[in-house]
Length: 264
Image 1 (tube, rainbow, N blue to C red):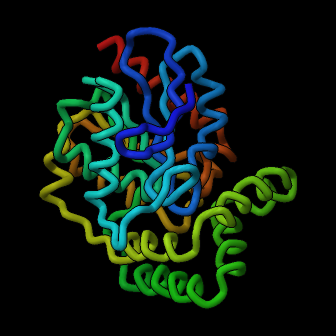
Image 2 (cartoon, rainbow, N blue to C red):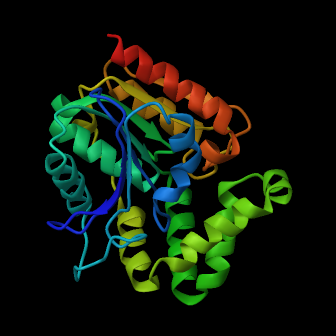
């Protein structure tokens, strides 16, 4: 079922198969729900929900400014609108920050939490790099989008799968430039709050690509230490969007984790 909620204008797709807790996937900045196509196909016998964040895809941007809380409120309205008491939450990149914020407030609603390609404790050099990307984006938007796709995948994979490059670049092209800058600024200015992270009580998987240059494996290992009972998986050879590049491995890891939680 594809729908835009009449009450809060969030576009979502709900594949409902049974009464089990659904898996909700949150995409990253500049993208939309279609980055999860391989996961939706793989988990076709599960209840799954994908949606477009505020200002992305088919969800409009109706605000002068945006905060991380706005994204958490969007998710809360979605699950309340669908009368979901429990669900599995998978957040990627910016989506992982939204998932972290949501989980720190509503862990009791989560059957499990997966933080994919998350960031934690950027070094001063890493902060400068992401600020430089933001400045480049303001001046040379086409170049910044090309560089983004190149960062997110291994060169060999893109050469062998040109349709993936076209699909991801097209998503970035469809995102309004002013909206993207406002939301990317949130990502640039993000500061980690260890106390909030420690408030997460949901069973948590932290996962990233071995070669992710923005959401480095060490970041995932460090944040995993802050969440009781969590564990960390590093996908060999993967970069940022390893749910696409290394989908078979990624899907198996997620499936095992969620099946264990469903059977707990």
